[in-house]
Length: 424
Image (cartoon, rainbow, N blue to C red; front, side, top):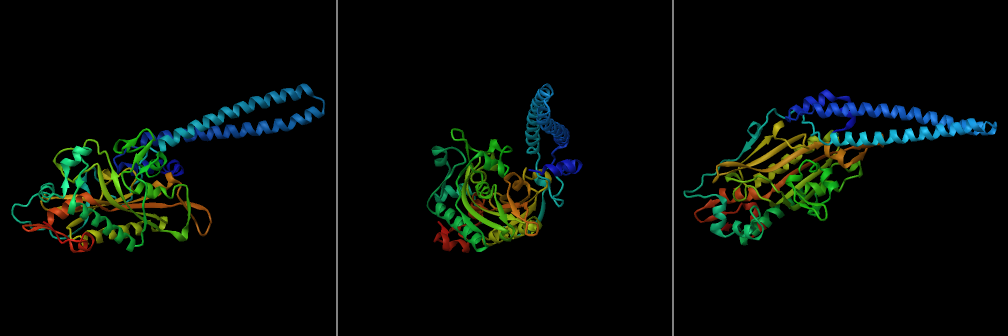
């Protein structure tokens, strides 16, 4: 969340910057400003009342020693009245403090200056494009038909067992999934990321810490009996490892990677654009997460973008990188790059990764700090994360782009992992 002092000192700037995300922050900022002013008034009144109470309390003893019992009793009565006033002021202060916090968490993160203007995905800025679109043989088909032809993914069986959006991978389809996971994890470890195996369920504090709550309750599966949430991404449990932690500046950046299944309700997802693997309720993903020093976090973002670029190039997939416009960015992000690979059979671009810098937004919620080497004081860190990579659309593009009359060719980099060169 945004720093309260920053909001109070820069209300016009906050309102102006959030307009780029097409979020009208004026009412919230005005309420925060008014409530903060009231808090200051209450604090000043409480301080004066406490000073008066302390002064009278000291006089009671003197009055008793001087035999002025009636005056002493009156002073005690006044002290009790002042104590009751202080209690009421403290209660009002706490209520307002909670009201300010409730408003504060409604404000999205401020977009970085280089975020493009725009409201829709069509207005995202293409910053790089690489690779040739493959020329497919005649009678080429989309991945859902290939999955059925080669019996590697069973969508209907998934519907029977669970429901739409929960496919069953079989035979070489399951082995290719495992190959991709292992390949992505090995590449992350080679790039200096420590592998983590996180829980697949998190509590409310974890959901709040990374910004899924209260913004995305409708997209998360909620186990109500235990008040736990199935994770939408490994970012949530991995980043929360560092909640309420002070790390040493010399240990930054901290780099973690994790494979997990991911669960997203994706309410309202239907139609031809979500057919097959294009959008699922359960899918596999390898995530990379960094905890960084504020001065170097954008260098870390460039490093993570380069890492994902390396992955898609090794998979021999045509891709493009987009810098998201303000209207297409997430609630928590300051700057996001999306990776899309081209699906030749569907003739469209498929998003396979988002790489984001959240600056201090998540860390402020998490109370994730580092100890400044010069001042020895704790300072809010920066957090970043990226998909490296999400499997469903990678799988879709691999199947479609590599189909031949003889079968589906496996990219060379994956052959050692899956143990076969063709799906036939």
